[in-house]
Amino acid sequence: MKHLFFLVSIIIIATVGMSCKSKKETTTSTQTAEAQSEKFRLVVSFISKGAGTDKTKSAALLAYIGVHPKKPTYTVAHWGREGEADYCLHLTELTKSEQADFVANVNKMMAGSDMVFVKENAESAHSRK
Image 1: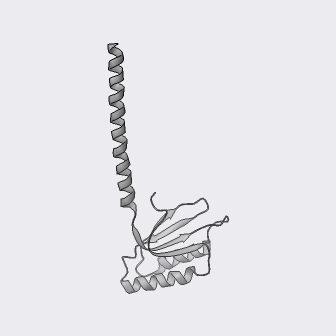
Image 2: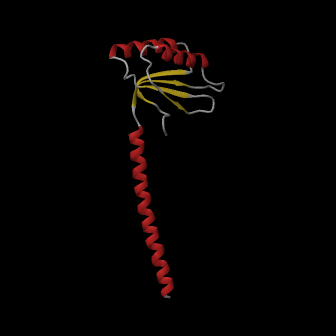
Image 3: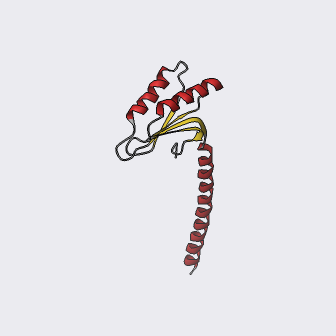
């Protein structure tokens, strides 16, 4: 009987300890998700409708970034099976007027494609999840 009481006590203590631990982990993962959400000056999303993304538009965007005198940095969040991706740019290398020109030029380049979305001052819906 003593052994049964001792075994039940250990199980209860272990269960209480584990439940406290998982609450702590949940809080940590929530805080991590909040810390990862960040706004970008420009997010260019390439989507697919079953036949891949618009390769000519993505090549044009990368070429424009490559030839730009200040070479703005970007991150890419790949999120789909057919090449879907978000190109996220802070544009901190550029002045406010240069940022406006850059965004206007990107909007002009991406016009005419229903598989490219350009968002300003937005979060990437797919980055670092």
